[in-house]
Length: 74
Image 1 (cartoon, helix red, strand yellow):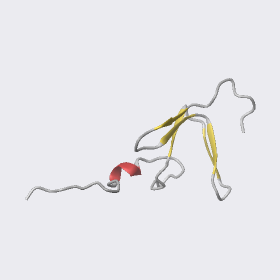
Image 2 (cartoon, helix red, strand yellow):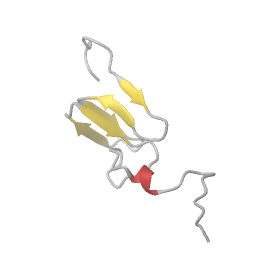
Image 3 (cartoon, one colour):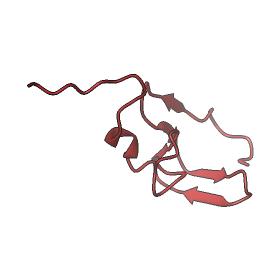
């Protein structure tokens, strides 16, 4: 955990994408594993489809959202 940050950490929520967090970041998973990134902004996966979890690899873009239809012309 950071010691007394100069300003609050900025987190940006998107409608259908990752959680954007100003870095550097350290994420502790439910199993106790730790992922660290020193990037300026990191994208944290919220859909759990990422092969790089907890980091987003844009896998959320490859699947239709629940309720979406993709009709084809006959």
